[in-house]
Image (tube, rainbow, N blue to C red):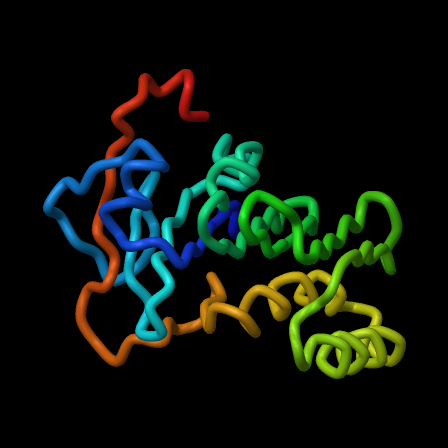
Length: 179
């Protein structure tokens, strides 16, 4: 088993973001983002929506979703060791980072103006990869980039201190259009 997930954090208010994502709350809460769709408001104000699959259709609509705001996205497919993240502002890409171990063990594609602190952390993980070859440290680099901006990473304890920060959502679109 491993993670297969994707998430988007936006600077829009929760109600507006839910409308753009065509989702509505169910009234049920969870400690973890382990349902088909769930959301939370991060302590730093970012609105986070998490899909319990890597190939969430919303990842194909980032131009529209970021218009009038800012968003950061990440996706993870641990079964094949693929990860990626990006930041968008007002409909355009700010930066993008991807690792796909199926292309090469050391594959890392970077573009744009990466977040402050990214280069140092990425170089540390790249150096670690050279000395320890039984773990894919490059896989973490896109996730580090997204966390630098939002403070969130899918496989770490959230920035919350307690409780059930995630609200379980349902799509207002038919399932075949959402996925």
